[in-house]
Image (cartoon, rainbow, N blue to C red; front, side, top):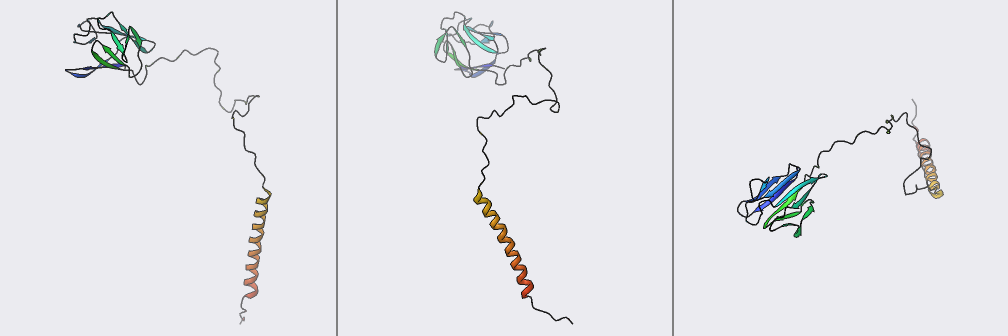
Length: 174
């Protein structure tokens, strides 16, 4: 829910929830937001909800309204905008969650989704990536080094085998 936080000299910070489509601001009890200050007119301004955002309008007040320090007759409010009614200043804080809106109606022309097992690959399907795929490089020296390593391991295994068989001490059999 959007709100207006006003800074009053005697009271301090006061927050007003903006719950209606039209929220009046002024000095009298007839207003939704009542500011008891001599610089605020009886019917000073109003917040009007349009398209999920509030617009602040001056209602012909004596001291006018200011949005972010600039005089305005009407202004679409953004998060954190500083508003001033006469000499009273406040901050507009919109609904951070966003207004709940109904989903748009389902169009008749939309085709129902199919399970992946039944879908087909489009004929014009291709790689949409802007980066080209790396081609696998064949390095002959790498293959030669691997082959030499395998041969060296095999030769070492054979040499160890023959060294143990041929050099083993002969134990007489009883």
